[in-house]
Image (tube, rainbow, N blue to C red; front, side):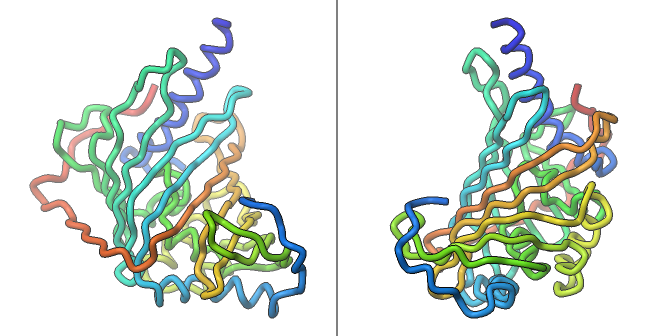
Length: 279
């Protein structure tokens, strides 16, 4: 029992490290399928167009989950908030795993997502209370697909621009909404070439920093082509020399058109001092 608790605690510490490393140096199906299995129009083309459908939708509420395997144990970081796709602005509250006794070991972290930047509040590790930490996402070896503990919803969809191969698996439901189910593999370098601005810079960083630029995924699109659920598998190199780490990121989008207001921190509210590394 003590050994298992130690593994769980190590997993929680490792999960916190995903968030903690960001400010230091940029370390690196729901429902049963229906009988309708008719193929969709060219699955690859359909998936590459998914980010544009989100731009048309404008905004949505989001839930995220990031699972990673470490020390023989899987730990999960969860997030919830809203995202403005047209301005690429979002706010998520990210909750780290509880300790083995069940007590919440970490204060929820507030994250603001902006073009080219990630802002974090309550991230601890020597950051004064009430202060924000700002990280340029293009300097992160994963482009903030993993580091923040929650994949930026628009960046997650942007990976689909790099779809190399995909299969249509039929119709099903996600949270009571009729959807089309696809499974495939995306290429981060190809996704970067199809993106622009801060999105392109982040995806280029990920293509260079991950252990492989191939991203297996499973996605559910509604009849407007909007992502309702997206599960992606990333593999990145652990900066502590323990080999590649597998991370599964899940993004759920709903309540499209929800008004989203994100107020970015003022310069004097951003902490620029030294940030301690996670143990």
